[in-house]
Structures are given as C-alpha cells and as structure tokens.
Image 1 (cartoon, rainbow, N blue to C red):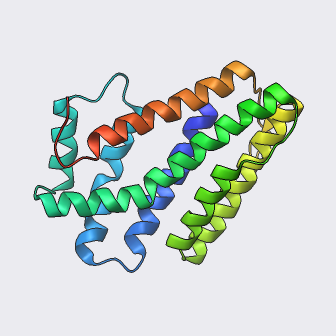
Image 2 (cartoon, helix red, strand yellow):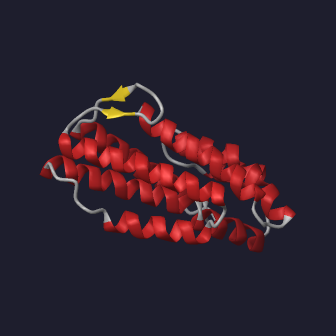
Image 3 (cartoon, helix red, strand yellow):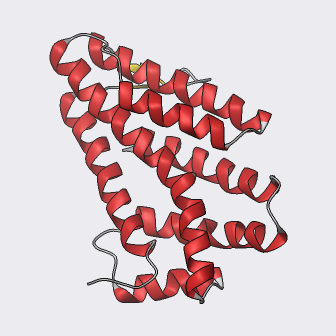
Length: 189
C-alpha cells in the first residue's frame, strides 16, 4: 500500500501544480489549487463518500454554480481521473502478468496514456509521463517475473504478490468510485 500511496501522491501533487501553471485562466488555476487538498482527502478517505464529504468538497473549491461545477468536473475527468484509470489498468495488467508469468501488452493503459500526452503538452508533464510509464513497466516486469520491485531512484524494494497487486487495484477502484461520487453536479445517494 505504501508504494501505491507514493505513486499516487507524487503524481497528484505534480499534476495539481502543473495544471495550475499551464495556460488556464486565473479562475480555473485557482480552482485547481483549491481542490488539491480536498481531492487528496477524498481519495485517501476510509469508507464511502457521504453527503457531508460532497458538500465539503464543493465548499472548499469555492464552486457552487452548475456551470462552474461542470467545468471543474470536465477538467478533473480529462486529467486527474484519466491517470487514475491508467493506474487501474496497469494493476489489472500486473495481475494478468503475475498469473501468466508473461509481460503482456496493456493496450487500454497505452491508449489512456496517449490521450493524457495529447491533452497535456507541457514538457514537464511529458517527462513525468515517461517516468510514470517506466515505473509501471517496472511493475509489470516485476509481476511477470515474480521479483521484488525496486522503487525508482532508491535502493528500496517492495515485494509484489498477487495479493498486493489485487490490493493496489482495489484501492484504485475504490478511489475512482469516491471521485465519481464527488465529481457530480448533484449528490446521488
């Protein structure tokens, strides 16, 4: 779980900063920075998202109109949610790699990454995407070969097991469910 949180938080913090700096208008940049901490809280929250969580999220963003909510939701879905979908696909492929002992192509993840690269043309983000792809390639190789995973730029290794792979995937799926609950114009029970 520690590896997942490191990957998630590192990417999350970079993206929020980068999205705020690209050619967005000031309102959108401020919205992005405002939701950074709130998104993190929602993603790491234990249990289901409640009406109070939903209200707190939108209150902290300072967004209340339907049109502004739609704009923030669209932005999050085109950036932040896409990388979470990519991560989910990688962990699904890691499970297949583990069970087959083969590093098979992960086509859906590749398609998502290509979309991310197209919507995020900043050189800094392109470099980040290369690093993310390398880290996930390492996860897939480790899963296929059933070898310890070495975290980038360190000598720390993480033991991957079928159980840990499934735990990481489930955590991402739960996080996506929470985000989809919050990223709606109206709260749905």
